[in-house]
Length: 242
Image 1 (cartoon, rainbow, N blue to C red):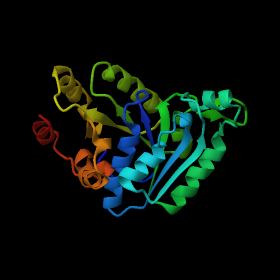
Image 2 (cartoon, rainbow, N blue to C red):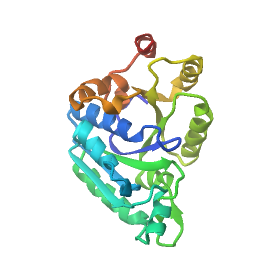
Image 3 (cartoon, helix red, strand yellow):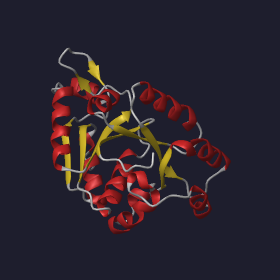
């Protein structure tokens, strides 16, 4: 997993609120520092009725991607397909999303497609009326996947399930810890050692609240060269983190 990732890359998570958006911003910042043109695409943004910035807004503030797009927005904080149904709005159609992402791939070196929740959350409908997921999107795009996970208890099972689901579909994946705690406990260090074979990055807790300039300068240090970072020695990283 040493080659740099280009083209479409799906950013998914082991669950909701694991840090996908901030990780997407970090990859954007590191890739753009390396000279790449980066697009960020959010197929389905939900929970817009709360009046908070969208995920693409957050990435734009932290990392200023070349392009940032949200394809559909729904008011309720639900899975995109459920949110569309509740709001009586058109659901995301798989082939329309594929066309939009492929159009950005033609114009950019790296296109980060941020999902919603976990890998198998229903995103929208196929023309047949069957639901589709972020896993289906990754397969259809022939994309690699970044799996963002938690550092604490329960993460090993959730991460293994997500990686197994991707592997069964032939999708290459790496793992990024979404929020490494400032005072890690035994469970965090043990989880880190188990996750190391698949890790391609780790962000400090609170990274999303950093000043954008500090965030952009720091991002390469949180990611391995596969994601345009400079993190190449986890032992040194662990010593610094402790």
